[in-house]
Length: 245
Image 1: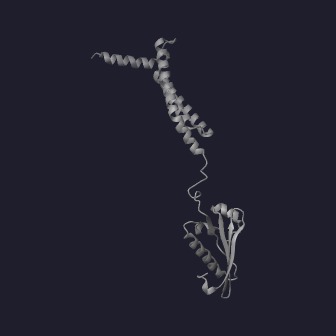
Image 2: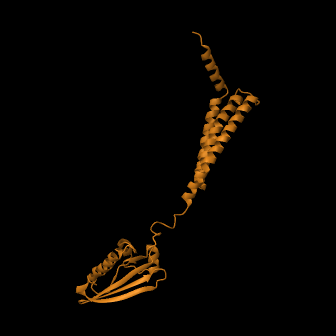
Image 3: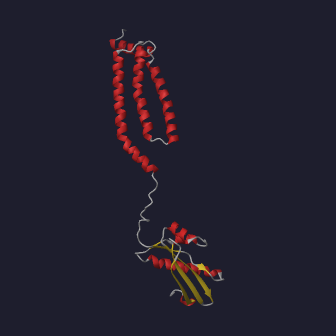
């Protein structure tokens, strides 16, 4: 059985590729490209380079593959020793196409990468929806039990809790939640620091003292900007009228 012309041509083309070591050159190039990509990836992570640097490197290496195969075809193990016009023309076309592709990709993605990097590195905005609230703000701190009986601690907490609930009913007043304000219970912390942590302009604090059937409740409204008193009052009432107070 004789070989067809097509079979002989295929065999001849494969023989040329083998003799000129085009496959070997291609495998060696891809192995080298993989090493380069690993080095670029490590450097990008270490120095904080944008993702565009790794992308352009990968594209450049991909463009270099057909150039390396062209060089292998003309200058392989059994190839020509001198560059021919056809080889130079092919390499020139590949370089022009590759350069145009790199430029278009970089030009298209640079604004997006810059915006992404800036957004990633930019600090969180100082103004949030909560901080943009222009209403007067207040936090009701836990009242101090001034009585000798520890059971009156519940009474002091109840007075502060009731005041907080009543103030929260005013729509034109921003009142910090009980969970946040009561976290300062038992802490002797400066009201200016408390104001910064809670983001309020004033705090309401006080104490409850019980002697027999008499109650003394003191309240103080303090400006958190300078720690100065805005208002203070003392209430002496019978213990039976606690809810009225």
